[in-house]
Image 1 (cartoon, one colour):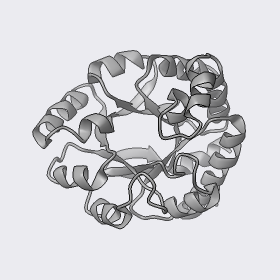
Image 2 (spheres, one colour):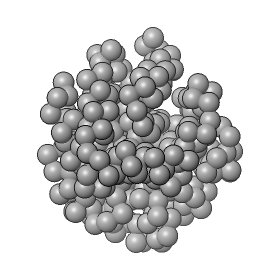
Image 3 (cartoon, rainbow, N blue to C red):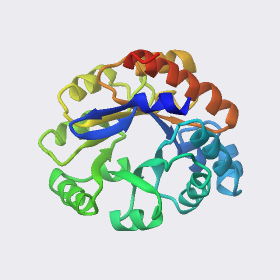
Length: 250
């Protein structure tokens, strides 16, 4: 299985990305999840379970991660990476200084660094350009995440430094009810597009949500939050099957 996943790595405008990223929002008990309190008890207060889940993913070839710039998450991914057949590739999002994020994930193969949505949505284009230039100076692919894609994508139309964009996007319009307008804006970008909240933070049927997201030509990659080994096995394997059909490798 791990060998087949190499076929799911695509290149767009000289940026490589896997069609499937292991998401980490459940691990920080992000507020969009109905099980946020449960996740806080399982992952934030306790060590080991994150590393166990990530190790399972890495051993099966799911070794591209959309990570969030948090100390304990960096440590757990680092532990899991020691058992990985090959070094996991990290697409990292950060609230803080890019230099601090790189230091926190030192020793891991960070490929891209994205401004967290809470920052990117509030800055003007000139401020975003300045931060992206610092990210490029670190030898990383620069990008942005957004909670408000129609607003932020519009203001970034002429910011050429944006190489990766991560947007909330699913067929039901959860967390972004302007789906068609977002898709129209994404057709105009040259940046790699990562869809987050594809499963509606656990509110949508996995099969239907994945089929929609992985069939959209505007979406290059999906970040899928995983909160258990059972979820990892079902969701990631189904995503692989669907992505392989799209790539013509099944």
